[in-house]
Image 1 (cartoon, rainbow, N blue to C red):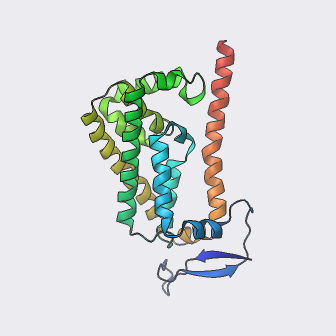
Image 2: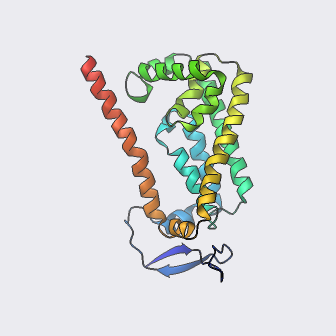
Length: 239
């Protein structure tokens, strides 16, 4: 038996958000991720957790493996089910601030450390080839690359650091950073929020949150594994 959130519909069949309640129910779950534990552990701090993950993904080089887009999309859906106590506009604003601050930190790291921050790594996502691809990305899009990079996984993590290494003007970077954070967070969260209004979608996500989270992990990890295998094979072939 497991306590899960249920969102009941109103008398017209539309999604009723004022009838969120806990019910005891049996459900198929993996046993690896218990939605009850997650919800109770996060509680009113769910938004803080989301913002921390967004900050890590955009501000620290170790955050490239985090599913930022999927996380924000899921945040938009779950904003309809009572998982977040804050209104939608507060959620979006908080994520925008976290994303913008993350990029500013990444920029500062790159500007302070210089090329050495990448040269210490000779394989994987932070190889010289990855840096060269990011440099080409900047050459193609100019200052707007900071904004465009928000929508490209991995590049989103490398771009602010690369901008700092390349000595992009702080004022230019900051403007595109804030605009990009606002567009990215708003678009992805509102996309999930809109999908959540489809009858049954938000209810399904809330009820089977464990399966949804595992799906997110799989979808996030598989491309990374494929990428790492490809890079290693290319390195071996080159040597």
